[in-house]
Length: 574
DNA sequence: GCCGTTTTCGGCCCGACTGTTTTCAGTCG
Image 1 (tube, rainbow, N blue to C red):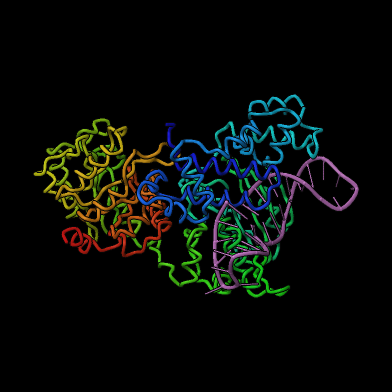
Image 2: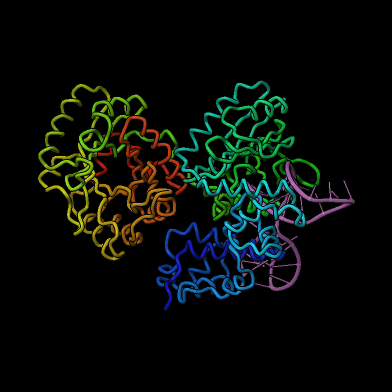
């Protein structure tokens, strides 16, 4: 039997099929494949496991997947093949997914390049562009040829999606320099950045102004802009100097609400809203919500949603799955607010691999409005990080006592990021762990274990009576590596049973991801949101952790470090 | 190929911009 396909592979196959169909001008089907691909990507469980657990019905229940696509998925996960994709590949033997990664090159252009020039790969396409073979083909001239070459260079530079930690501060810099311009009434970050996705492809901005020409003039002259890609009266597309692409939408002030909805997306969410509008005899676009030719309302997002019979949906929830249905039933949860945290429960200091002292970290935490902090330095088996043994841990406890006496209105908690060893035992003796206010555990070594072994290793640790929190539970790092193989279904069940909280880590790990956040909350597991700061400026990670929690529909009550330190410590012992 | 507050057939989101064009196709979000 062939290797079974993963969710990512199946989603990519569906996208590829959609492109082949689009190239042939097939109506409606492509969208169905794309919606299904998106639905598969948002799953937290592997389809192989889902199918094993509850059969075809659960596959069919995934939004956007009907009988026919369910069969294709089952074929893929049981045989390792997808007949339709293989047949299309035979008919169109070129790298459709790769070539359509080039900006402005879609399925039709890719097919045309194959038919006329037999271009199968990005390398062959680059050669064709360099030797001037593209200009002169139907609908393609010298500008297209130049753009294709530029697009290939862009791809080669690895300038793909950036982590939000990099994109959001950059976007805020641009917003700050534009805000001073006369006539602006609104200026906001939109797109995937406003939805606080983990990774960001484009920096999308939206502005309303009484003087559109002034804004456009100032925008294209910003020092951050590398070049202007396209410029119309309402939309300017640019490439920023950090390699990211971006759009600025400029609209008159009375179109703000609908425009913000439109430009925030997601694309799938917009489609759901517009379909809903249509069913109600209305039309929704970025210019407003219309009944016949008459604009109904669009001053604020809230009005747009209300006119569609919906609760306002927070940007982080606008992914195009079940959020619109929930809004129709008035069941949108009140998400945890960005300022809701009272403590940070994962901080490394210069006792292990952090840059700053305990007191420095505490002072900064206090300055940004927190009232407690757990010091969680690494433990001895992590020698590369100068992990603490029992003796140093006790010494650290004494130092924390001293600093706590000096601090007013702030408390440092004694803790640890204790390594879970290969056999599931902890890296420090119980006598030492008992001196701490709370015990946190995580995996840093032997990541390549078999799924079942890794799961048992973690479960063994979670059952330890002193363990309170499991840090970065899946071990993934965004844009760097996937997590280790682990049965998160089971981990979540065990966490619930033994009262262990799971971390939403706000560093570049962003672990748990939002699918598991939702799953954990549905199972009644408590969460903590932490910075994993190794230096004072990394407390900024708390915002990204909160964004991640919000995308997983977390409420304030679900997150333990929204409590006061007294309530928090009490919740650990209960 | 999916889906249902017009539900098992007959629909399927909407507009802006570019390039190569004399009226539009392709791409993007």
